[in-house]
Amino acid sequence: MEEIRRIVKELHINEKRLMVELGRKEALKIRRRMSDLTFNQTVAEYAYTLDQFNYESKRLEARGGNDNSLLIALTEYDHQLEELESYLEVKEYIALQERLDAIDRDIKEYYQTIQTDLRYFLSSLKMPPIFVYQGLDKSRKYKLAKHIIIPGSVQMFSSTPDTIIYPADKNGEKSTNFSSERKHRHFYNDVSFRYLSQLTQDESFDIKTKKLGRIVVE
Image (cartoon, rainbow, N blue to C red; front, side, top):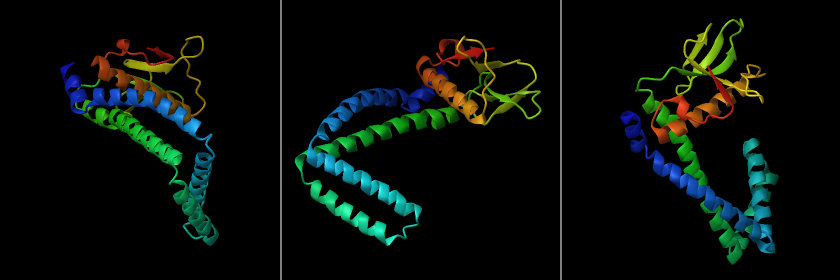
């Protein structure tokens, strides 16, 4: 669909996806190198001290910044980190961590683009009647389902005039036995993201062209 292609292009989704794919491959190599570096005693000391600094920082934050003993400990850790940062192996370790952080930001930006920006722009188009099952209402007479693109659009069904996606059990049969709202939300988030991500590649609302995991469509 031309409208979908235009939106995908404007949001630079293909470029962001490629960056994420390459970044994840690079991240594997970086983590292996960082793991090797921790066999160096100085790097291991730096990593341990940094962990302690971050842990105590969170404790101090939880106490509203009012704990002199923690403030003293953080000052000592900070001095130790400054001294250790002068070592060549530690500098490499820090640079690798900074690259990992940059890759993580790229991944978060990609997910944000799909989850927020893409949903927003697609909502201006004619929506396909596709919903994701979210359990029963309090009376247990009606099915609840969220629109696969617009999560805030919840409908109640006594029958199923539109397309509804259900979770499947291990035998591939329709399952409606999720025990909590959290599991229903997780199912929706997983199916919806898969749908949107693949929509940006096949440029179609057609559910038949998508691989959405273990589901049953009615």
